[in-house]
Length: 111
Image (cartoon, rainbow, N blue to C red):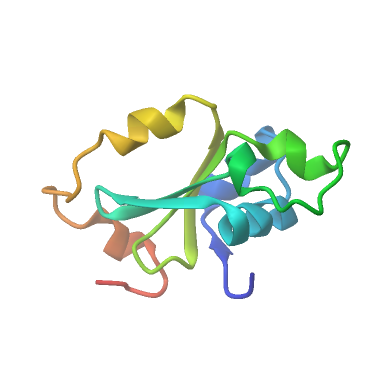
């Protein structure tokens, strides 16, 4: 996906968790999206994988990986792997009542 920018924190976490930028692009393009607390959670679930992907493909190892995007959807805040995290993320507040921290960190200055 074109236009995806990784924060310094996301670069560090993706390197530590062995998730390449092409993996992040794949998750953003095919993952399930959920808007909560002023950010977008994209998680790759097994139901989101295209049928054309064989059983031994690298994308199958990405199931359960979550990419957190800012509200504009082009700036990656962080990346983590935890299959049960999406259930926890879905229970978060729909809106963020805190001051907008994403606005300062996002180069797009999304509102």
